[in-house]
Length: 216
Image (cartoon, one colour):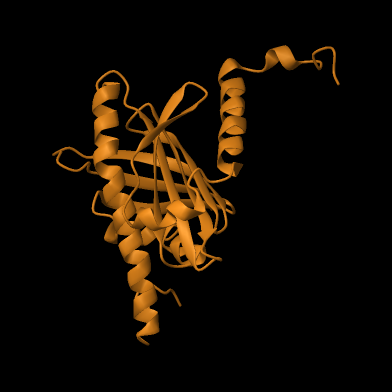
């Protein structure tokens, strides 16, 4: 164990140190066992009640849903960045800007439900295949945009427990109560849309029809 600071540690900028601590805390949370007990999975045919989860000093809004298909199917939908705006109604534009392997830079144009305005921002997304997506804002509207998708096998791997969590700092012109309210409006819609899309794809394949979203 080190009893003295490594040489040069005092040069670390506070913002970098904060981001490092946040990444460690988020990683620990994502690797924790699911909060939902096995016997409660049947109650998640609709989005669960949204709860607040604190990571460092950020309050995330978090919900879950059970999707009756394998995590690989759900993953394919979530990582099809160039077609996401054709699936999720609140997305008016979405596309891959840069592919850095397990890190992707993706542009978004979002119109929150019930509001006339649109917001544009770019996220850096870290992928852990078939299990996790984590993101943070690199430029654009809002001061901070953080969040994650977590996909866990359920019912022996036949189904997926999907967790969606989001934090937005709207800056001076979007007070936290307004941002929180809007996340809580849109989060159940996004979860329900994902469930419907994933389960419809499975039914389409069972019926012997090709998946129209399958890339050559």
